[in-house]
Length: 172
Image (tube, rainbow, N blue to C red; front, side, top):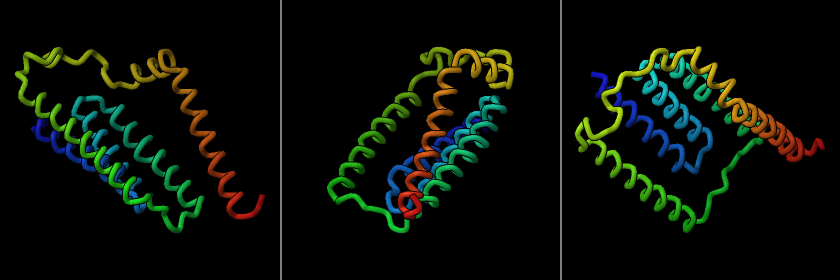
């Protein structure tokens, strides 16, 4: 049963990611496709018995980051989207098709390999995998610089969105 759930979550994640990348007409619809992708990835984490990481995936990414993205889109008041020329759209679709075919080939290769050929395929998960203690310890020791850099990046993105909105409105 869990193998079928994994395939279902994987299919939803891939379809949502493709919908987000290929949907150039509507930024809000792209954000909703991103939500579907993040919820599916949270489901994969739950299948791996990393319940805390799965909950964080849904709350932080599908909740906060996408809400921030939609807020910035609405703050900038994008009434009409600028469509790329047909040649640029064709290049994007071609690149997405090539990457999708390569990923499909890798998935097909992984499905045809025997389980013993994949290193660590039968290994048990370590004690406390995906728990709050391990995530917190790793976040504030090994990944502290990346965590702080991400917070500064998000802060500068919000300041930039406010500056752009003020410039457009003529208040500045």
